[in-house]
Image (tube, rainbow, N blue to C red; front, side):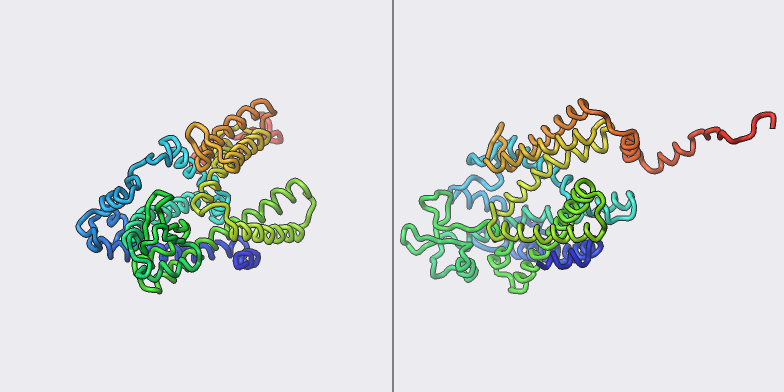
Length: 415
């Protein structure tokens, strides 16, 4: 409801400034607990350095963080923390597919692409992409450190701890149902391990970022800051997606195809209606999520990689790609990837989270083949492709060197 209100009132400009403020809240809320926990556990205020440093507190003081994680995992029966492709959880090709899908899926996210419409020039767009990557890198390189800190703190504070002596945060989250405990051996101790027969602790994966400051015994205001950051992240992403949905339905679908003669006021009403409908649908999925957040994000990136990314690349680098090829490729990619996600299909060792890589390849192939079998795009569209690929300064140079065309109304040589 909040997103719907300021998206409808503020429009693109309002959402742009709102997202700037929300990112500031998000990055501060994300980094302050990370810095505090890193300093608390390793003595380093930079989490990325603390990730590979030696622990200075707790029962494993004097050992490196990663070595401690390895030992804890071995003692409990888990595979080593940084050992890849273990315990049947994934293959090398599967992890590579997920990585590639996340990478190219980012380039095809509509709510990210629409941000480039808010800058004043192509040069500003390139600079904005550079700054965006820098700020994203700050957040993403901090995530592994936060995960490692949380894992050590969680196991050390709960495993083999009497239930009556469990920390307060355990009881708080248990009351919400997001942490579940069953004393299977009736010994009054919390046993945590990989075996379903003996494991007594089940923690919802979505709460770890919010619970991390509590697990580390940070002050209550830090916990509140993390909650505010999580809310800011949700509002920021939702606002961008809401703008994409409303503009796609009202302008790209209704005005461009279904009702080309519609007025601006009608287009605005359709945009607001589609925004409201999107809020209702996403609200239902928020209350009844199909999977935990990381899985849903991976699926979304896979759909973006298999539908939008190939068309964007071909639209810039192929003069021959036409509308029929683009539509056929997008439909092929999104239907294939969506079907594999819904029916949990695994191909060549690639699961649903990385299946977008195969959908992307199919999209490329179908788009190119169909474009070759159908009429080529109009000459003006091919010229636009050339303009997109040519730097501005080079275009100006070519234009200045172009010979002047003779005018039909000029004087003859005898004049």
